[in-house]
Image (cartoon, rainbow, N blue to C red; front, side, top):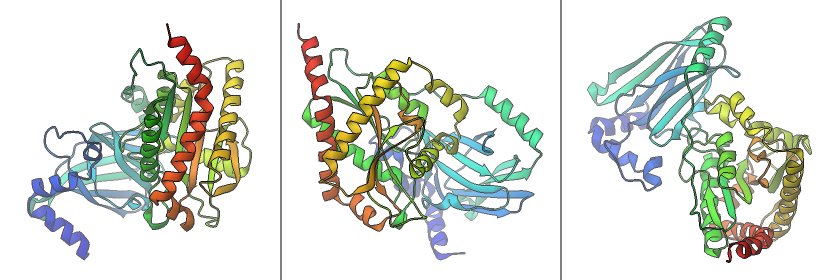
Length: 416
């Protein structure tokens, strides 16, 4: 048994409640500052794959038992396990393992008190058995998922049955005070929870980088006193693309800014900040690739993306859409101009493509790629406090400059 695994299992063996509470300090709920309500979440410290293309087993080692519900999804083929919150203390890239029927798997928070495991399949498969098995003389638990190969028709029927009997819980929307007439800026830290986003040099994780950056930008905008600032997520949880758009629309946002940090493994020399706006046709191949990757976020997190896309499309007329896109382009150009002195820009800093998260027809929206986590230079910048200070100052100034006319106008309307 590897030394590190033995050490971690020994910690569990010394007392499950004690080690669970200690590890739970790093859980999403603890980081969000929420008070504990009940026993600590089970801690997962290891995941192992075994088997072949006919039968594959995935085993999680945890501090206590778990009892998920299971469903299957098509396009792509996935097995989804929903369960109460689990504190996953696994390497960020642990789910990149593949074997037999399993292409990869993801795990993480999908909502308050709820976690999810999504297994991407190499072909149609069914869950033959799940079980909780005692290990380390009862000090730890092995949760076992056994997959068996099945035929396409059987898998399709199971997916159709699960789709008709399940639905994602409704989104909790932040609502401002009725008397607050300030323009609303919605900041959207990309990915979160089960969706890690890109993983770059030194295991730098996109969802963590963009969350920290967004929190700093939010603080500076709030300090200005000019806006009400809403974030799509204020902890490490998954928010669907549809719900990110709904947050902007429900709050009658004047501007929506989605924050990301991509990787480009094929060209690690590529670096720099880029601002994207929405378009029916991509401005270039790299923009098209990025949009395709970002638009798969719901699918990777076990959300039925087909229904999500239908809800976003076709809300207002073409005139409103054109006006919104014009404002989006104006802000993008302003942002590129403001941030030039603070950050290294991509050689083509303003691009466009069909991003689902930018498709609110009535909210000017941009997606900001802070840099590439596949670039050593960019990773050093993105993790440096000095660079974040300059970059958040520049973006804050661009937002203030863009929305200042609307701030004055709304103040006049609110004055009796």
